[in-house]
Image (cartoon, rainbow, N blue to C red):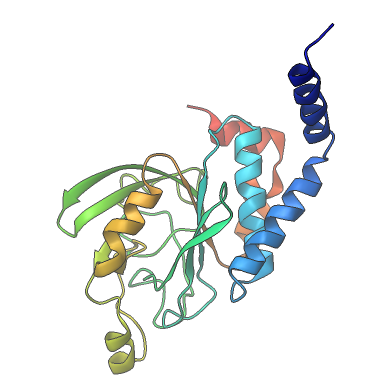
Length: 230
């Protein structure tokens, strides 16, 4: 006769498995919306859709998710970092876009080296290093043709003195990078340490071409398989 502990564990496991995936997704989205009421719920939903699709097609799961909404002006905090496992908001901060992406408002995005523009889509974080901009975090772009040149372009998260409220008051925008999602110097190290080592970063803008072709937003099996190919 099975022990009582075994019976209880079996019942609990069955109950968890019986919860439909879409119900779990809806509950997580609802939690993120409560944590970040200033964020666009559509953008949060797309970020979760993209990461769920990536994991379903072979990318490793992660506990943390950074969401950048480039449809917001640079003077607004538009970078959120969530702990998905503990359902906590860890950071909500200013983030720069590329010099050629726009002034206060982002307009243009590129995957091309030398463009000085930001890139959209889903990224995974890699390792950290000390470079020209101090403590920095490498990003690997997961979307062919959209952000997969991120490594060779050296698109990294780093701190920058031009990402500040004082700069925004003086110039009407925060400073711009060469395409990197730069953050305030004071927050850079703890934010980077939170995201390093294989977490997801999702960069959004209402670009019709990208929204309709992203392998992780359409979750088309052929496109996703191509994106995940080594």
